[in-house]
Image (cartoon, rainbow, N blue to C red):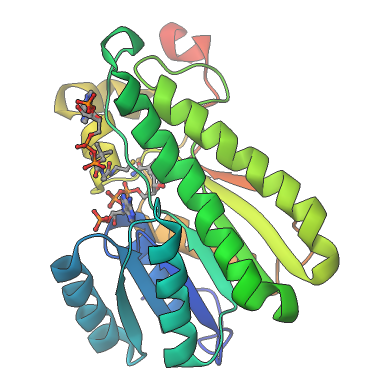
Length: 265
Ligand code: NAP
Ligand code: COA
């Protein structure tokens, strides 16, 4: 993979990446492995995790452990973290990427639909981070990266569930940065913009919407999985060692235009 980082910056490190079987977080797993880390990838679908783990190991020569767990279930999360530590002997980096989303106006969203997205995104992020803290981070320090979004910076129709969920995640990022910074745990987030070729993009920016969306992005391109992976690498590389409690927006300026999008600016 193309990179500006030395290939050994994560030698000896172990990462636990939820959502690592697909899309953006698979890209983060790839990048971390290509720079020396051993990685556990976590999701609900065993087949996809196994295939991804095999492909990532073939591509990088590093070990990848597929771990089946639903982030909503603390016992499953704890078992997956225990397995990772048993397999690799450590846990240094947690990436919370597991999420669920779909377009739905609030008036058509069931109580359970709203709750489900909050449970996967926000409570899932807390469950994983807390279990990793108890088992490894508290004693050894490390990094947490929470994958957020920019939906809630202004207001995004048909996204009340995900906006609330990601706002909660940003609150977790800032609060844990304050509580856990003194223990040597660096806590940050990444807010991706529209990332081409991902499940999120196909669900949230369906075909007919693409051209208009593209024209509103200041950098005039959709993002790539590698754009997000490079940011994640930067956050754990040592180059970002004083960045803390921050959610880094990686979106080509996509959320900025506001009325400019309507005015053609
Ligand atoms: P994706 O490929 O669908 O990734 C979501 C992952 O989460 C899947 O691997 C899924 O695996 C896992 N997951 C879902 N529910 C889970 C659960 N209950 N327990 C454990 N794992 C679960 O989507 P993506 O587009 O790459 O999105 C990745 C992250 O980036 C998400 O946090 C998303 O909100 C954020 N994001 C994406 C975009 C974008 O343009 N794509 C923009 C802004 C933010 P299983 O199905 O196997 O469980
Ligand atoms: N619009 C409105 N409501 C929806 C919906 C949609 N497109 N998809 C699901 N729901 C509702 C369901 O009807 C259900 O509510 P109900 O019990 O009142 O009928 C509720 O959401 C939970 O759905 P269910 O399918 O039981 O949940 P799940 O835990 O199996 O799956 C989802 C979670 C719904 C988020 C599923 O889309 C998923 O697994 N997504 C992961 C991948 C993803 O979203 N990637 C993009 C990340 S940005």
